[in-house]
Image (cartoon, rainbow, N blue to C red):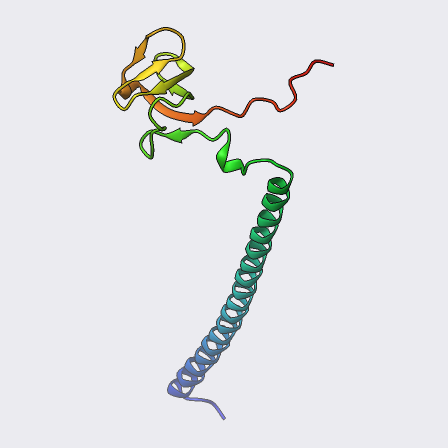
Length: 140
């Protein structure tokens, strides 16, 4: 028995719909697998970050117990946009004119440690405290 063109068209449309349904089901499986993997990676990253923070705290305690300052207290350049050193405290500062220099800030201008040469505040971008001198200065 031969099928009418309408029946053939209906069968073709039904086969297309079945193909689309299979495609959508596969897309949903892929999406669910992606979301599951993404959530697992996010949880792993969060756990790893917490572990790293605990380790940083432990190492800072070890350094502190050994008499070292926290890294944030030494050899970190501080932007003058954020903060200026205490008035007349000897520091290292960086100016576009002189490069790295030792000197002090007097709440108006920067001065080099040697002489009375002053540097315009607009030329200085960063400063840092001077490190502590060595504890044992005896020669062996």
